[in-house]
Structure formats: structure tokens, C-alpha cells
Image (cartoon, rainbow, N blue to C red):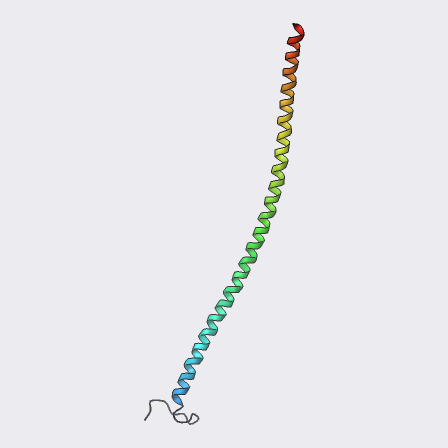
Length: 103
């Protein structure tokens, strides 16, 4: 006698074939589960990449604004330094001219 349970709808000798089919189906189910997990991970990765792209765009915009502001400050400071140097040169020139005129 075989150790397989009796099933009148399965022809004799087909029980081991049925077990093999069940094992294959289990492997298929496991594979489908892994594939679903992978798809979920890919979707999550896409969402993270989109978020990172948005942050990158914001950072690029902020960097451009900072660059403009820094250039404005640099130009303003250049004019202040130039005006200060011009004033100092004018004062020194007048001083020297005053001294030369007295001689």
C-alpha cells in the first residue's frame, strides 16, 4: 500500500505528481511574492528619487539666489571701498597741494 491518501479523482500513481505540482506552485507563489516586494521597493525608490530631485531643484534655486545676492554685496562693497580710497586720495592730494603752495 502507498502512503498517499486515497482520492478517487486522482488516477493511481498520480499522487506523487500532485505533490510535485504543489511544490512547484509553492515555488511560484514564493517567486510572485518576491517580485511583488521588488515592485514595491522600486516604487518606493522612485518616490524617493522624485523627492530628492525636488530637493536638488530647490537647492539649485537657492544657490542661484545666493550667488546673485553675493554679487550685489561684492559690487556694493567695491563701490564703498572705491569711494573711501577716492576720498582719502583727494584729502592727501589737497594736503600736498597746500604744502606745495606755501613753499
